[in-house]
Image 1 (cartoon, protein in one colour):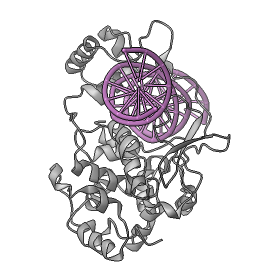
Image 2: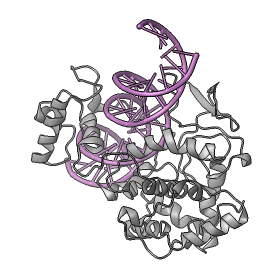
Image 3: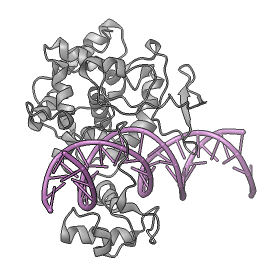
Length: 309
DNA sequence: AATTTTCACAACCGCTCGCGT
DNA sequence: CACGCGAGCGGTTGTGAAAAT
């Protein structure tokens, strides 16, 4: 996504509200093509966007002569054709950063992607679901909460290892990581709802589902005399109508959190404490700096409360 | 060698918000 | 204020490839 404003303001907003009806641009009739894109389609789309610029996605297919819906065109461009997209495997440094940001932000993939140049939200989401969540589990860490698995009755919802059966959640056996299928009851899915800051840790709870915010974040913010509401308000500013914290403030705030300099002492402290630490175990020494980021000086907070439950 | 299962990721879907009318 | 459009987000699904049986 290349709209940082949108990235920062359009944080997770899945909700329980009634639908506005079917998406209008994606009629399944009218010969709209679906499925994988061909090189020819890619070329047409890329050429058109190069000439005309991004935007007006709904009109684009007709104007470009593509038999795709606008949404599909936009997704293809954003996730695959954009020149700024970085190809190749996720590096250890990127993985480290994803982990840190996920611990801070939860499943807000576009926000996370916004801090990792060249990577898309979709790519990061996929990488998380297929690699990182399993990696954390194998190290005894709950990928939802970034806490030790033994603390929770653990289940993963939202893992993409659900191929071919959308009505099944996969439970990881925390000892051997085998998957077992459990039927979803009507009460199982947890729709995304905007959490009240005071009830965030409740929303994080044991039923699984999308995790909007994590209470270790709140602890660490509280630990810094920074109210959880700062983060919450920043993340949900669009829905709260809050203008007290600008995007640039939140951006700076995030930058400060991925600073390595002050992160290290906490890592060492955690090791001394004999606790496992997500980043410790996984990062392999990757740094934000390796990614070419200029991060701020405040990162001491990053890891402070992880094991203080 | 054939079939089944698992994995990885591209693409889709349903939903929401901002904005213009 | 209500409505529709354009756009973006996160969860889910589809599918080809690889691995296992």
